[in-house]
Image (cartoon, rainbow, N blue to C red; front, side, top):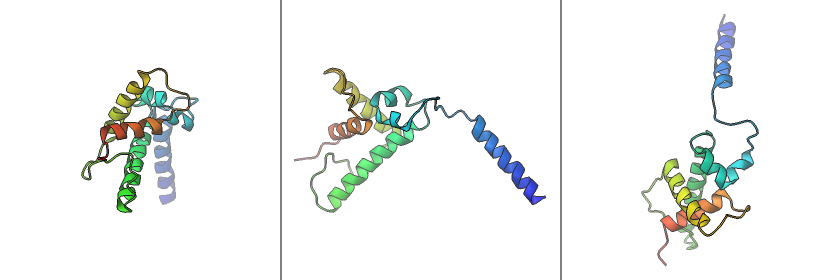
Length: 129
C-alpha cells in the first residue's frame, strides 16, 4: 500500500512539472543567457533569466569581497558592505548600462551579459581612488 501511495504521489508531482509553464520557449539554449539582448527581452518571461542575472551579480560581489579581504586593491567596483541588491536591482543597473552603451552604436556580438553587468556595477559603485 505504501508503495502504491508513493507511486501515486510521484506521479502527481511529475504531472505538475510537465504541465507547469516555465516560460522557456522551444529552441532555448543556455548560451542565450550570455546575450544581453536576450536578458532584456526575457527578464520577466523566462524563469532562468532572473536567477542567472542575480547569480552573476552575487558572484561578482563575492569576488570583490575576497579582493578586499586579501588586500588586493584591484576591485572594479566597491559596493557598500551592508548592501544586498535583489535580482530586480541588478536588472535595473544592467538595463541602464546597456542602453547607455547602445547610445554610441550597436553593441558588438562579443558583448556578454556579464560584461554589461560588471560595467553597470562599476558605474553604480565606483571605488575611491
